[in-house]
Image (tube, rainbow, N blue to C red; front, side, top):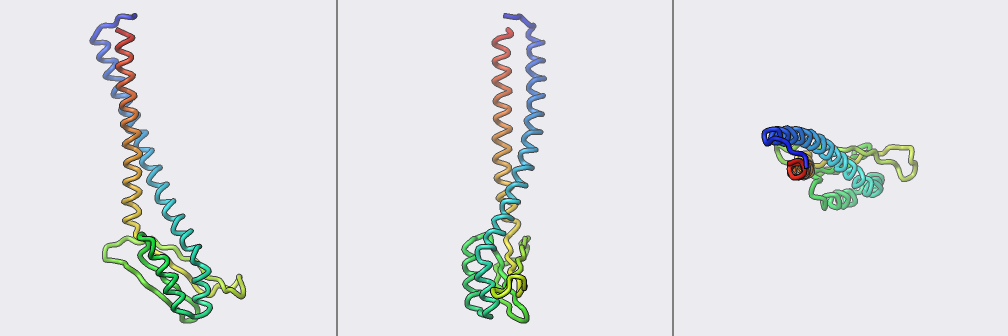
Length: 171
């Protein structure tokens, strides 16, 4: 085995620990950012897909000028706890709106055009669905923090194991 003075060994272990800690912080930060953005994009995509599932029923409600069908569409959307508002609007004067918006809520809304069942080129109204952006961001933050924390601790653990192995073989 190679013999190295203990002060050199300590300095080497110290600088390796600092270097790997910095790498760990950078990797964890990048992981946090990417995981957060991915969760927000997934939530938006999910809202879009949910809207697509009820779009035809909303088109029928507007075309038939039927508030009962519009209410059923809204009730089916409110099964999802993240959805806080639904508005079905038709031309010229059909409108059904219901919401659970509370003061201070940050909302994110999508707006889909509703097409005529007779002519798919003719827009007869719109379907607006909103979800609570604060809840979505909190869930994304929690997910990203969990992921980046696991990565950080794995890299720190690997650094400690590397230092221990190095001390064993070098001294």
